[in-house]
Amino acid sequence: MEKVIMNTARTENGYSCACDLLPGWIVAYTGNFEGFRAYVQESLDFYLEGAKEDGEKYPHIFDRHYEIVYKFDVQSLLEYYRGIFSFSALQTITGINQKQLAHYASGISKPRPAQAEKIANGLHNLAKELQVVTV
Image (cartoon, rainbow, N blue to C red):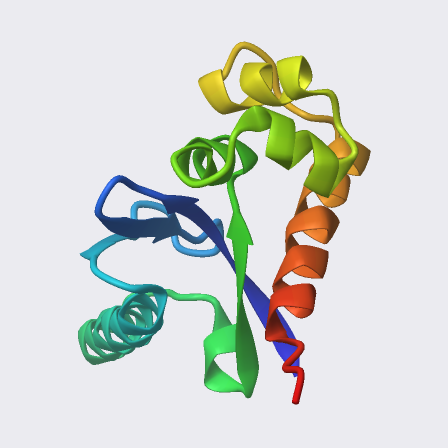
């Protein structure tokens, strides 16, 4: 199964995404992530149905089984979580200096791929810890 990457950003009230395979196709949604995912699939299906009916070209990956992968923009993710966690807390979670995290969140600098992965892994690990249920 091939993966279709959705370049995703957390917005003030929801989410937005674009896909490099579909230039000009952008989705914005107000609400939770589960609703956003359903909306993205609905929008994608609508776009592809129209392209097929009109005889327009589209990437044929969509004719096979594919998996949508949401790749979050580090800047918007940090900016969103800044309202929940301090940069000091995010430093503890990610292992990246809080001043550097502030630069990433404000757009002053962009993280190298290794740093972006470190941020993602820190947040994933936090989520795993929160899922542990004690009896």
